[in-house]
Image (cartoon, rainbow, N blue to C red; front, side, top):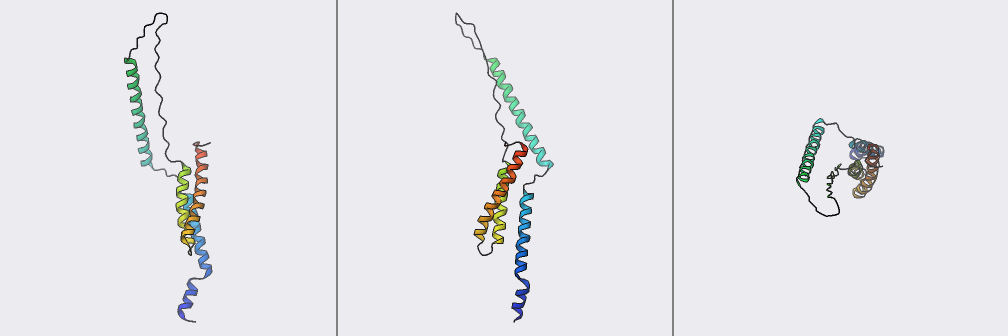
Length: 156
């Protein structure tokens, strides 16, 4: 037996390959679980609060302008048998966008990390491993994100 074959046998034993796959799977799983965790970043929160406040101020200015325009308009209708009645409808507030749901974020993160892990684990056919891992990761990520959306009250 040559020295080269002996070293290959010591370095790449089947047990080490299996252990490598287990470690990569554990790291990938933990990356999926912790990737969906929201960070309490004060800069992002203050920026979003400022933008929400600015949008609120703009909407209040638009409402006040519409009210003043409606008050300035005078409608005169003359009919003999009926009295004059004037009504103005309050403007409806536009629906606020909530951004991307946690289910969508979980699906994206799960698919990406699952594809990477699948490609690394399946050495013979990395493309097949990436497809299978991406599908599995997307499903798991969607489930986790959907449960978080339900907890937040975004979906019922």
